[in-house]
Image (cartoon, rainbow, N blue to C red; front, side, top):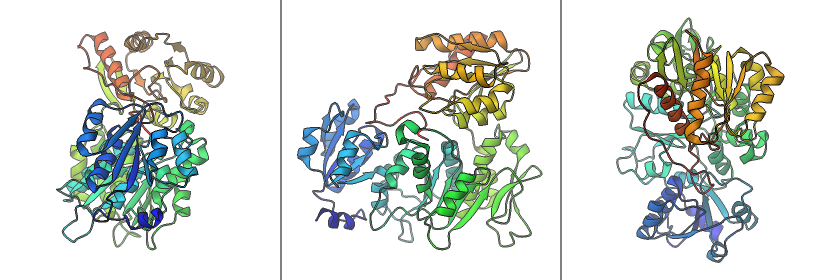
Length: 520
């Protein structure tokens, strides 16, 4: 009977009253799920290891209940509740005891994205339809591309918002009374794994989607690279108009070729080379569109130039690739090329993404703390060859040897930090033995970056770059990648005498919450 009822729950206006739903996790995503379901009239039990104090205080106000404690085993309270649906926050891995119990007992298991899709008709556009969804994933570049695409859509006159893994839950946007024409949804591999479980009558069907790239990451969560890749591929499921893929990353093209899409959906390629008739790319320093125009076999539309991007700090190769991907998504919704150029004139990268924090004594100090995996760090090192490279942290089950072999030998020196630094040092000994390697043995968070900067200052000379691109997560020594970046900037400014860099984030990394490091 429950499964029959769940098949009817494909609208905000469906009968959700009394539906027993267990919500796993109480961070920003978990609370948005609980709040939505409570508003719909469901019977909501939130189950979490750690309860944010503010969210815990609000739960009884919205009409939901809370159970908090160890989740090493399935709580008796959850079993007694007998949920008809479990909605999990993305931090819960497939082999978590509660997830395993849910699946073994045949209970419907959703992520927040599936719930948001089911109730996306709460606020409709003028034509009586819900907002279009544009889905973005990839090992790296998701947040930048999501912000770029949303900025381009707004410049083109559409009501659009960046949501999802970028920080604002999709459910919050769906319930915004002002409504949107389009939602640009950043999806982590964790969210996409849950999306791949959906069996409802109306599966998520995006207007356009992109997987920017694919490389080893989060293997400890998925269990293998094959599972990680399979989760990423779900981004293209049921795409209606445009499947955007990276021509320089064959894995993304295979995903598109294997995807079950809506009849008529087009494959749109992007890379830094000359584009084909259904691609976007670069011709003699000009970013062009050869996909969304009538005479695409003989002509192209100019979007911007590499020189213009360089004047705004946006010309690093991986950033140009992100811009092309975002432009393809925007063009699929008929955004004019002039609007795309206008959007880029005002766009700024987020902090901790190849951010120049200081130039002093001929040395440039660059914070790319957001490079939380080898693929991201490789892009940073390509943008700054010959840098003094600050590397290390939690490797998340990923072997860093290939990165060191490909890029490490070109570094002027390596300054190694973090819990897994032995693996990094070994990789240099084997694959880049000519590069000087310095280990940071500081244990206290407050001391790590001071030692990093002192060591870097002793190596770097006029014209050099010191690049923080750790290729690893931050939780061994820092609260988040942002905390790591800010502490690096503060240490640099202390060194050159320009003051500190501000205060620091606090964050938890238990599965009940939202991981502040990039959830590739």
